[in-house]
Length: 412
Image 1 (tube, rainbow, N blue to C red):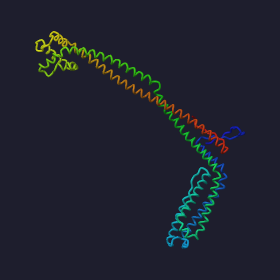
Image 2: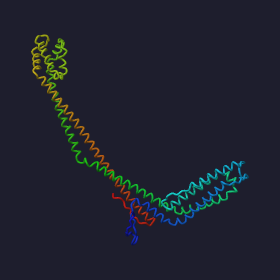
Image 3: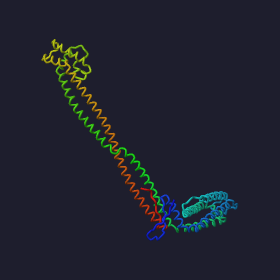
Image 4: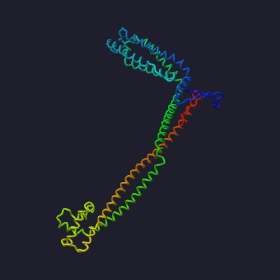
């Protein structure tokens, strides 16, 4: 609701009235001021609009009478020899002309009386053009019934005369209409800015709610995950070194019987090959008892001379070492170390997953902060544009309508 207050203006004197209004009240206020400024237009234009309406009615009545006319056409001025053809065309002409006359009839809602008369003028001009087009189409009828068109001519002449006067009255206020259009454009722009401002405020609130829960915790969480990954990688490096050392020791033990083992496999009828254990040390752990059987058999063959070796004493010492359990201890140590390494690698994968998740959250947080900053800047620019548009509109109301207003904008 528009509220009026009393305020002093420079040059305004005591008691200058200010009208306070919101942006959505500006168009009704503009229509009110525009109508008040052009209040004299109504008294001048009502007669003209009524004259156009009554003349159109007179032309419509003449159409009805012309449609019922029984007189024969005057063939002296006609370019056809068939009276029947002209009579048929006469009916079509009446129908077409009445369609033109009825097309402009109808009530529409207009913001001001000026807009109503502007619309009345446009409708009258369209009606005149429609009548002229219809007359051109049915020129043969007009020529054939030229002696029966006096009422048509009189009514049409009156329509043209009233329309011309209405056009002149509307044209007197072209500058006023330009001022109205300028203010209307400004008001629509302010309305669009107000809507955008409200939307940006809503977006800013949503962005603030979405980014607040994660504030302060992300950097430490990401850093902790990265430190854990580095620690596990160092642990894996150490385990890999121990595995290599233990595995090398086991390989040395097995290498001492490698050649003798191939000779044993050649002589043995067993499907189990001792050389297979040497080639793949994991088989020793998985089938240790079978491995010991094959090593024991090799020792007997060496001792009996069935398997020839360069240094029988060293070969037998190697067999005894393998049977003593030193090898299995080394290999079980390798397996235990490899299990620890696998567990550490699995933990690294988990830590990396955590790191990715926290990094993604941190990235979204940064994007949210950037979006908030961008929205804040847009909000500030929109507020500045609103204030500038507000000032111009207030000045235009004062300049065009001597109306002092204060536009109340929403809180920024």
